[in-house]
Length: 239
Image 1 (cartoon, rainbow, N blue to C red):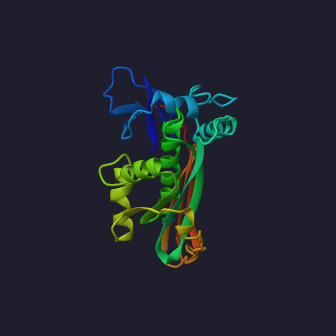
Image 2: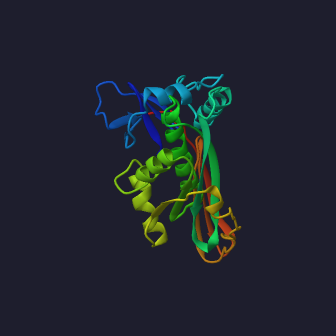
Image 3: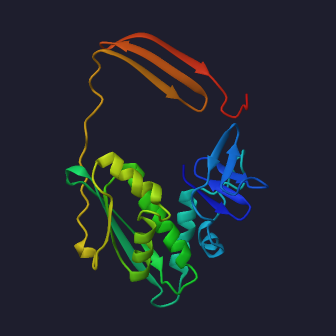
């Protein structure tokens, strides 16, 4: 669950905005579930460059701020920056087994620019997105010295992304590693390879799909459907 604090409000990916009120500052509830907020509060400077509302507000939460719109808002700020030398680029690579490598890059503001906090926040989230989208056991970063150092600290044990730093070794069985590369040319080239899976249907199997409006189940034996069911439910109903 990806979330971040914004003053008296918590913005949560996939959930939207939940009022903090008098609740525990590290916990909040949404319906019948209670979540812990592990990320520190976003700075005011970062809010200015990242937070924006969609043209069509979410009915259940008018203040919901989607990540994609936040990044689009940030990129416009970058494009509108007229200060010479205040925009550079950070690039990163995430290595995973089989020689596969995920690559991405982001224009960033200089560390003495008011948009630096937003650059650091967004770069960290882009890396986290790639980690949970593709996985990885090694992070390599190249770009301006300060943002690379701050990202390395954030992705080291005890940093902002401590959960990722401690979880990835459990998945891959090798120590998590973060390195700073002097020049982007020193980063490994991106490489993706398709993985074929899920084509064996022998034996007894049960499939379960929890959707927003219904629950689907199916029982299969040696490729033959023995039973299936579809049960409607309303995710917005507190009961």
